[in-house]
Length: 177
Image (cartoon, rainbow, N blue to C red):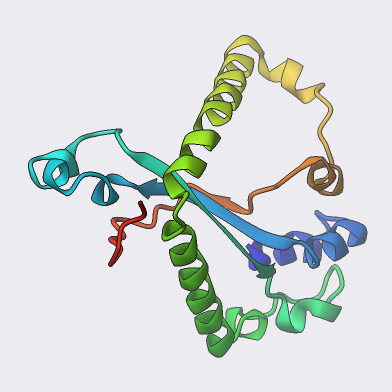
């Protein structure tokens, strides 16, 4: 994400104010989480593992700001830093360990199922609204729509940097109760 944003800034597709804002925002990741391995073990072993669209939850993980490394002082028109200039291998591995730790803490939380149950109804309402909006509006109407700046969007609530990446079938040593 840091490289995508940096590239947009260096190409002049993003203002300096937005670039400075983006460099200070935490990275919030979210995605689907298979809860089937954590439900009734007998059900899981007798076919629940293959049951489609049941017991799917979501994980959330917040990391520090985007890694910019040597891109900190770059200006539009400057060359794009390499991957390792922006995020050295040591820092990448540290972020991976941090995310793994935070996600496992989230998954091991004793209220995991309740948190997912509370999150699902508003999510379905929001997705339904988006679908109806897309279905009922033409492209020309969308072009006239007012779009929020990233700063305005962040001031109105949580903004996800990444979404949709599954964590696969994480199985806990001790399932939450």
